[in-house]
Image (cartoon, rainbow, N blue to C red; front, side, top):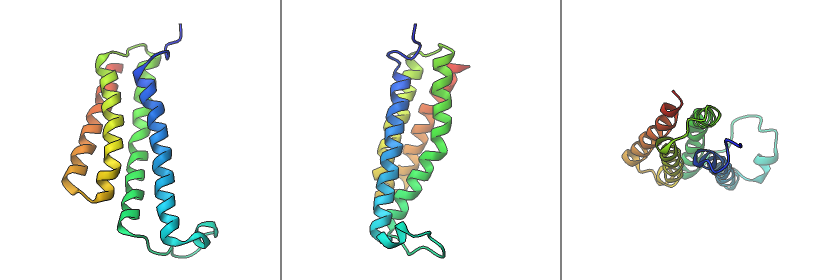
Length: 134
C-alpha cells in the first residue's frame, strides 16, 4: 500500500513547493526589473543597485517562506511515513499552505499587523501537522 496515495498533507506539501517556486520567480522578476538585466547576468561584485519597497518585501516574504518550509516538509513527511495522518494533520497542512499563499500579497502590500497574524496562522497549521506525528 502506498502511504502517500491520496494524502492531503503530501498534496499540500507539493503545492507548497509550487508556491515557493512562484515566490522565487516573482521576487527575481521584480528584482531584475528594478536592478536591470545587466546586473542580473553579472557576477554581482560590489553593492547591488537599490530595489523598490515592493521588491524588497517580495524578497523578504520569500526568505520567510524558506525559513518555515523545511519544518513543514519534515512534519508532513513524518506523519506520512509514520502513517499518522488524520483530519487535524490534513487541516493543518491546508492551513499552512493557504496562509503562506495569502501572506505574499499581504506582505507585498505592506499591511503590517495582518502580515504577522497570517504568519501566526501558518505556524498553527504547521504545529497541527507536527502534533499528529507525536
